[in-house]
Image (cartoon, rainbow, N blue to C red; front, side, top):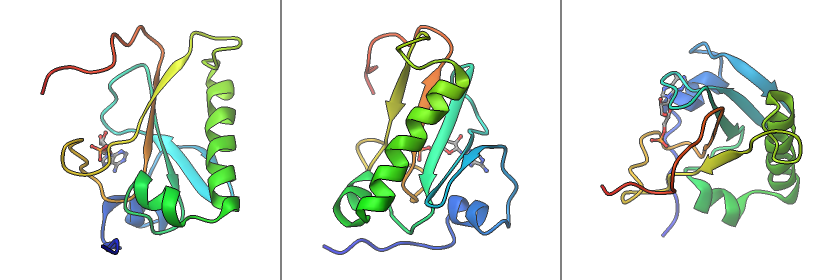
Length: 125
Ligand code: AMP
């Protein structure tokens, strides 16, 4: 089944500059900004600029340059925040993709959460 990207989603509007955001880092292929409803002292969303619905879509169809830029940017953000595991206390990445994960915004994004102990991985739904 082909992915259908809705260009009216909120992150598409952020990318087009129609809605403001609190940017942490921007590169050729991605944008990182503070989540509006933070779940941890550091709660950053990293999104590709390309029209991908979720991580699955991104992994399947993004170019090597987009994939590489995404991972490198994520690592740079962790370092910038001082939470990279080599010199800080670490972080958790979350990529809700699809119904069971309760994805709300259908533009691919990864949550980077850090700044406090984050507990075990999952709670019961
Ligand atoms: P998800 O449930 O994984 O799709 O997460 C969507 C995330 O987007 C939530 O954590 C929201 O708080 C966040 N969010 C929604 N609108 C905005 C916005 N305008 N700026 C920043 N974060 C937002």
